[in-house]
Length: 129
Image (cartoon, rainbow, N blue to C red; front, side, top):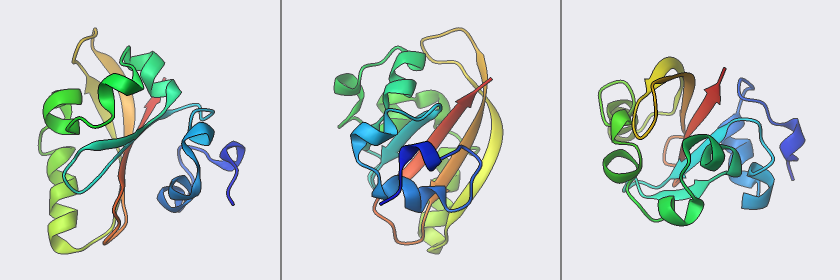
């Protein structure tokens, strides 16, 4: 089994490694992890992202990511990329510069969008400067 201390934001095959980690292990990562299913419902949410965004896991897990939790990501840069990859049956692994704006002052971040072809869980990873 993969150890959380061996995971970094930029490493190869990170989506596969995150899928193997228990929720307690993703809490020790130094970047935000938001996992969601094919219906965009949040299934995983780590402590780092909870503290940075000011949203508890109880408030986020079970909610639609792009319409309730982070509507600022419901656009062609983020949500549409996941949808396009899913519809094409393709993997997605792209990192973009982004500005988060919901419920906070604008914050520059790097987002890494991860989805394996046919995988049940997709990830938005958030790296703050």
